[in-house]
Amino acid sequence: MSKKETKSLSLALQGGGSHGAVTWGVLDRLLEEENLDLEGFSGTSAGAMNATLLAYGLHVEGRDKARELLHEFW
Image (cartoon, rainbow, N blue to C red; front, side, top):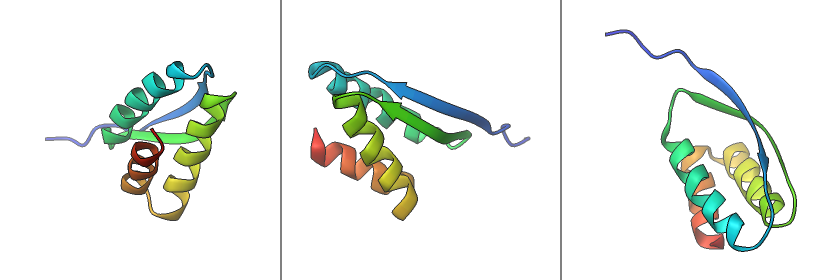
């Protein structure tokens, strides 16, 4: 069985209150995908909050920390 190819992904995250919560669900799902290299983020309003938590979590402890921070925020 061959290993899946890693794909790089950059994200632009929307703002708008409840849209940020929906985006959190999408991010949570993307963080489950080991073959995705999440490498760039931008956002506005709630999207900026999601982008900050995602980037910080990935930087300090990886995917699990990013998921934890997003969960605590929303």
